[in-house]
Image (tube, rainbow, N blue to C red; front, side):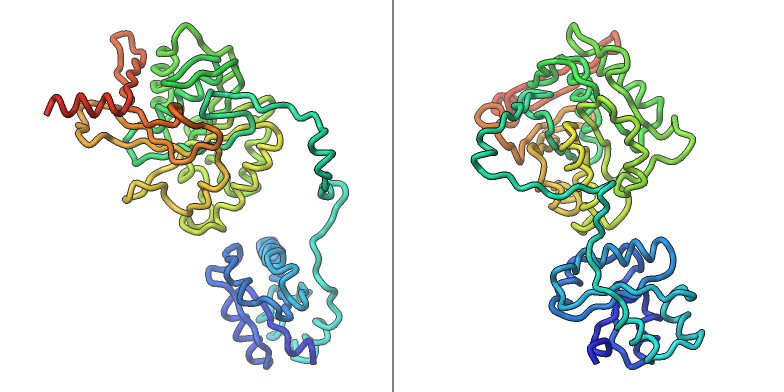
Length: 385
């Protein structure tokens, strides 16, 4: 009887109907494999769950992901693959009966997360006295004061405000050990800049202008590297997937800062407004941080000028800052914007104050940056009015 009272989780509506015809209770999520959401698990808390796995790789991955969200929250949790058939519908069409399915469910073992000593390590608990006695290397700064070692930061802005120029300036300063705007890199570090959308010629022109504008420094050969679409023989990978992240891995050796410009182009899996779609990127960012790699996410603002999509993106970063056009901005001015900090972990006082920045192209093709305190800029506007 226990098996008959289980709730089956299947991969599509036709399988739900197949279960109903057998007199069993079943459910599925909309959208198919890979679209399970955390709130679905909340509704199944405390129940006996059997996940019927589709017999293909996406189906197996989906079943494992669903099981992981339900583990520890249900009375019973089992995974069952119906060998000889792709799914429950095909299994019943081949003569599968209610009693045969219940026998398979009763014979299935409880699901637990797999532990593979070759690829996984157990969690470590440290007593507070051991933690306090341990010598832990202080975090240095990659770009003082906004970007520490093992730091996560997010820069976002509405389209056309200048976020790529600012991101390139940050990357160039870190790679060269130079200064940019109000920030200083104490020493040169290697940087990987992953661009998701610019034509190669545009990236070349932007980079040449930014590098020419550095004061008395330049990156050492190989210290600032780019991955950009036009120079690939395949599409830029989706960095919201393990496969895409693995393709970046060979280029991370010795890298101190990874710049991802921008999230809309580089992280395409999942829905932008749903927090679950951000989790694979978040887990990857945390793994990079454990390895000592800092990450700067470059992202778009929405129509309300807040960062677009789930607010989960703002949970982990040490620094979140945005660019906005001044109220009296004219497009003929080119790049002129205000820099506002929305989250500053460990950065206080004057360093966190907003300021105005303008970039002009010199006659020699270099970027010339002008930085003003925002109060001063607004006072000049008032005088002009």
